[in-house]
Length: 206
Image (cartoon, rainbow, N blue to C red; front, side, top):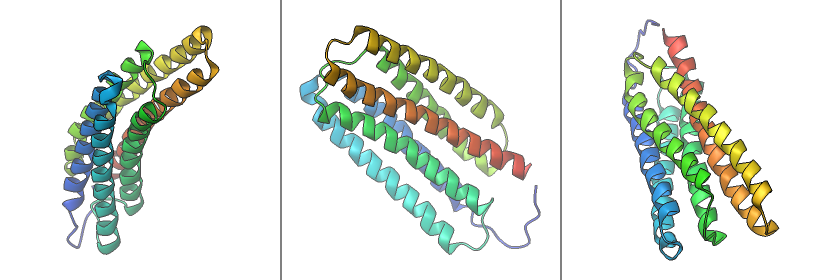
């Protein structure tokens, strides 16, 4: 652990924990939206947009604090990268939900539910891990499991694409569903990026 000769701002740990909690909310709302009757989805979508705005506010607060703090608890670039990566997770989830509503997709393949379940678990693990940045302890299980889940998400994504192209009877509907599936895959990738940044921070601070 590096020796600090001046006080450091530890509020970043709380801010990262708050950001991760927004991801749990976002993933839960995304699951609710996809499971809702199509006529009820707009209301859930608005709540998901609100959650995304809350997540944006948390990200902006981290950036403001970063720009006004002289001594940070770990590398400034890593703080910026982690805040941005957490924000990306929410952005991709919100985009997927928004597309379902905008495209008026009446039904989605069963595999989409599998994608969202992975995102919910990734969000939960991320929220559990963020408070542990304060001590930098007991984090390896987190990034190992996130990586496993992302590999699972990759397999589901490829299977979904294969099924979409095999079973498609309407090219326009195929394109709509494919775009949603791709946003969900991007969200899983974004959670893995968060885990990679956490691993990098932990290695630097050990």
